[in-house]
Image (cartoon, rainbow, N blue to C red; front, side):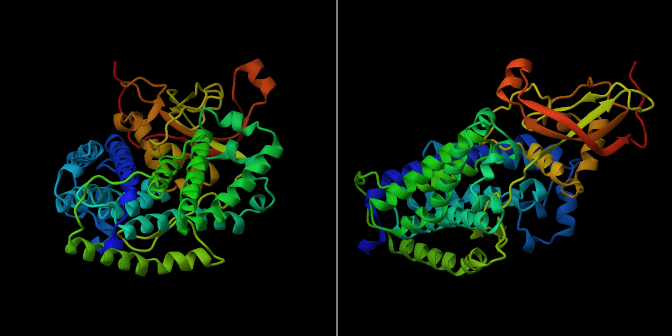
Length: 474
């Protein structure tokens, strides 16, 4: 079938596949480095406890059959190795069927992690990576030209990501309709980046233009993805530029980067494909079957997207094959941060010598400038932002975090930028307090060198200690 393939998109496929492999690598690396404190046998939300109460059919994962910290580590590091092989282009050196199986491996492996990741893996970009990773299995390699159906399925994903985000904004917070959300967003976003302070201080009329441009990019431009070239390329390119702007303004894990990656698949670089064979019949049948499956599974995401009660970032099947997306349906006007402190005093008082724990990404010390971490995802830091919004978000894991800090647990401390206590002398008590943070002005920054100004609001958690206090080492 001559219509089945699109030879002019071979470079688009190549860039898409290599970039997607890099994102897989970042995802597996984050899992390998963070899982022990978050999900391990002594983690805040242990996987063994989760698989004991959630059946396999609701969350398919290899860890239903066996779990140990050593096994999870081997699983995650193997995922890194497979991702590196894909970055190097090993799939292109294999027969078509073997290349497809190689792309299937990281999808299966990461699905096993996401499905037991609980609240640590509840972000939309996890499902987005799985949905795009699944389609990548059927995109082929150098033996055949890219199949048109898979290319359009990738555009269908990109459409839902952008259009869904646009709709949730228009239906959600009134500041999106008033074009005023960016008066607050750069200051109150989950994890500011090194340039976020400067973005916040852009003139307010410019912020209004930004919001209006965002609405055009998310509500109008996505429709153009399904028009003939070069209009589709122009639409995808505009989305890429918008996402790069967002990359500069904050730390959103790999959300912006994977959106850029899938947009690359819609760009026609105008270069012909090298010599390729005709697609084998079995491959055509498999691709058409996958296309039919995706269209069938799209019913619930589409129904959600057009609903007045639209929800963000929802998976409708346990394999995360077709999902619904969205971001920032509401924007906080004020930034609250939970500051965690410990003391070595035997009796905790307000005038005790309280020392603050420093996180890697979330604001803490007002003089410490935000760092760039994306596309790497600091999961604990993101959840601490949610804790500042409401203690209910932190209820499942915050008590366990405090317990690990009281024990000076090495795996937990590795998630932090700095612990104020030496390894052999854990704190006697740990408490948490809620502060309001705001960006300093240009004048305050010059005078104090601090990018944040913070004000105490209330107690978040009273001073707490272990039931059995370990003896001090002499």
